[in-house]
Amino acid sequence: MDIQAYLNFLNIAEKLKCNTRHSYTSSGRHESVAEHSWRLALMAYLIRDEFPEVNIDRVIQMCLFHDMGEAVTGDIPCFEKTGRDEAVEDEAVAWLLEQLPMPHRQAVEQLFQEMGSQQTVEAKLYKALDKLEALIQHNEADISTWLPLEHELQMTYGTKECEFSEYLSKLRDVVWEDSVRKIEDAKY
Image 1 (cartoon, rainbow, N blue to C red):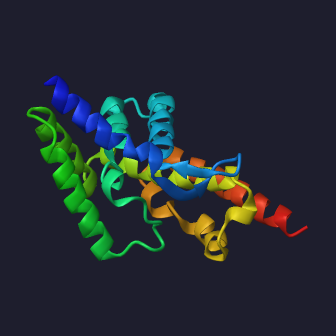
Image 2: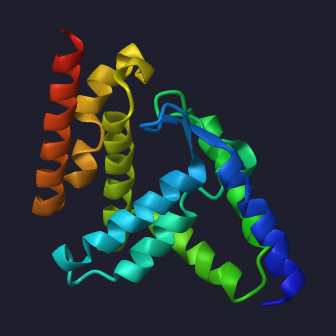
Image 3: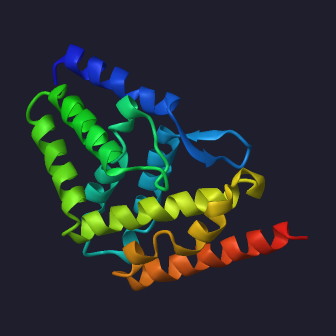
């Protein structure tokens, strides 16, 4: 890869370290988009034995690139994101991919197409883990950082995405139990 193109793309990607998400860390600060993507990739790596038929390296690539558009747009929480916001993010991704030389551009374009169509087990696994990571992060943050609507969202978010896998459904159930406990403990 051309060195200047490499450095230019890394410069854009660095914004993911600066752009924060709605979620908070256990230390009480906003989580960055890059931190979310890193842990999502870690989650995929750590469950590789549960999915021996899956190309986990491809899932990890999806985890690393899935929020790349947010280097340009910033993060918009799922409960605020509109169709127009998604279109703007898609435009940002298209622009970012133009910054990559071939064959990298084509490879990452294919990743985004696969993630968007949600037809492969790899894409479904990445999407389910993306939802679960957000839920886990909320459980790790102080409940005072939760918006009122997030109490209900913790009970429903990611359920549909996890249904394709018994393992992920069980994981979702354990995360749900942690959320219930956290909510109950906050009442006292």
